[in-house]
Image (cartoon, rainbow, N blue to C red; front, side, top):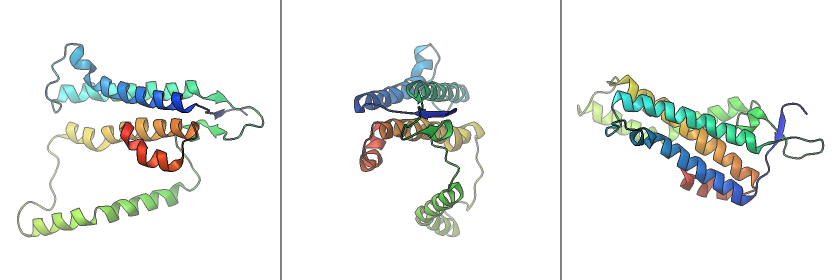
Length: 178
């Protein structure tokens, strides 16, 4: 079974690894100030760039940890995963899931969008504004969400699932680790 793995963990190991991932993620953001860099303002370009490096390195470390915890699948194993599935990538049903996600996001943002539109029509602020700082926007819109979702949703949820935690516990308690 080439390319197939099984992830079996005890609840204690899953929780400990999740907490460790959280600590490493947050510590990586503050490691630069410990190393002597002046990172008092998180919006300084140098601070943003260093934090980009930190979070991307953390993602690599967390992914390597998940791979190290996984075992090669043996004939007869249940819950066999491909490497893609181990990290939450599923090809089957992707279009439907993506459409549902976009629709749900659109519905959730209808209220704030309607409010913004009404306020812009009354002259409180422009309807469309362009970003002033590309690096901050890249951090806020791309890097932070992707790295946080990878570490906390992809990897921590996979650990909890491997420990056989109930789905309701993963859904409602999982964000606390974030």
